[in-house]
Length: 64
Image 1 (cartoon, rainbow, N blue to C red):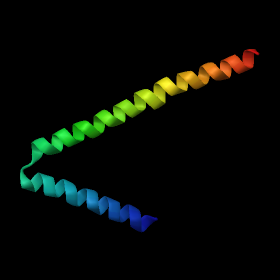
Image 2 (image 1 turned 90 degrees about the horizontal axis):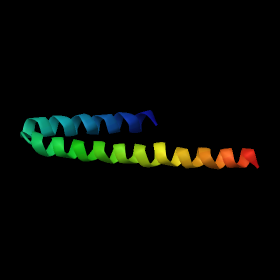
Image 3 (image 1 turned 180 degrees about the vertical axis):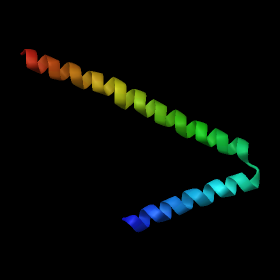
Image 4 (image 1 turned 90 degrees about the vertical axis):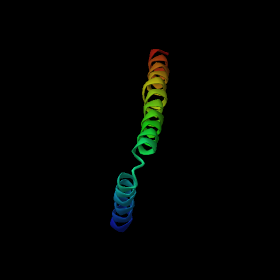
């Protein structure tokens, strides 16, 4: 497992250095924005909304 983490980190560092040296900052910023947007959507849908649904079901089961 540590080898996979090291390889993943090396790939990430290589990708960041490649983007920075190629002058493609705008596409990298757009890609980062898309990734952040997907993460934010994931947080809202599965973190906030779904936890509220689960809490309501638990409360209903407790009151029965």
